[in-house]
Length: 199
Image 1 (cartoon, helix red, strand yellow):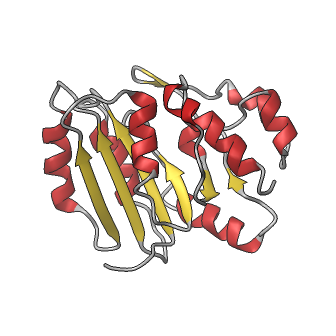
Image 2 (cartoon, one colour; image 1 turned 120 degrees about the vertical axis):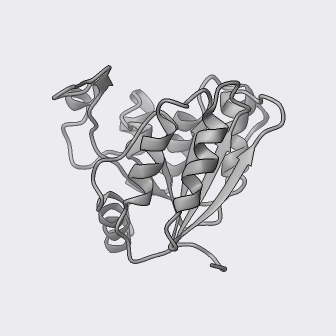
């Protein structure tokens, strides 16, 4: 599968042997009418994450092109995130950390359709459930934060409203400043940059 993809998905993993299979399952089950690029970066997990990934990737659906990178040395969270972003070629970008997973097989199609139909929006996201052991919460901390249908850069600058695993956004090359690699988080600053481009 060659050429530019409609959507890229970034998955970062580190010590996720117990969770990574479910994360990949949620991605592989997605029903979409466009090709997907999956960028999977394992930050030299010392557990069996790599072996679980290698085994599961044997069942990759034909509409998904996988770029699997296992770093030779541990980079740390934000540098690994930055490295993954540099691999992206898709028009849109979604995230699913190695210990998160998606439950709606139409999630990506719905969000890409929304952004295609609403060019004044740069980001689409949704609320989430939290899994604690075997207990799935009926609400999340974001529920009280996210009560509007539309937010602006000013809203996002006041507090992080976006659960990382829920986001799909228009991707564009960003000239990241030097401080980005030492930032304690990679997703929130990125969302602030993207939010400058639309609702």
